[in-house]
Length: 114
Length: 115
Image 1 (cartoon, one colour):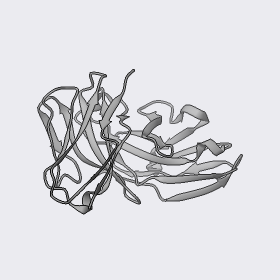
Image 2: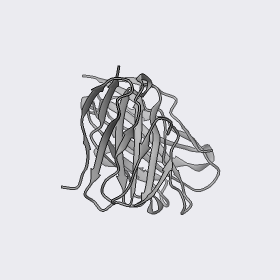
Image 3: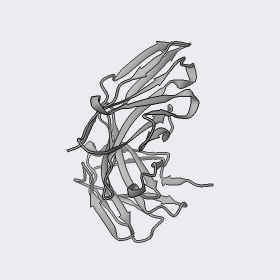
Image 4: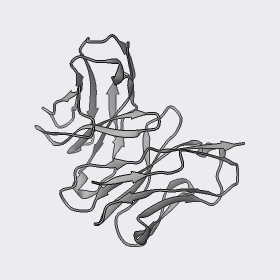
């Protein structure tokens, strides 16, 4: 089944403790992206990747890192999480943004930083 | 810079009522437009999309949207809503040139349907 898989679904952590949220897609998509969803603000893009080893900042990249060593994986790294990073995070992939393909979303990761 | 505005933050309707959710974008060139739906507790799913051609686009579950270039709008419509349409709806836009790499989302409209 074609899908985008995020793990974990729920995560509670403390300020400053490094964490990684994994994202994997099995559709051989070139484009992958991370969003955070906050009430009243919709989805805001954190980082995106056009292809392997090609990543770029979105609208709200501060406090986040990503890597794209393989086509299928696009982990989101919070080196030193802070409470303002408490949010619902979605990973998404697309065959190619340049071909106007729609995004396929993962099921989300609800992160709480205390 | 591109932006997308969804002016209705929360819409409450009764079943069988007609629906129209507003979406306006700011970009002077060719655009690609999307509506995504997020059912409670689920991830976003594509509802419909417009790239070119007929400005009236039909999507899944009886939804349609009309691209009006002169108004920079892409409003979502459904003639008769059902309780199962309760969800959050997001309009999104990408620029139409080949190097586009970002999708800009609106802030979303929460739709509540009274049974």
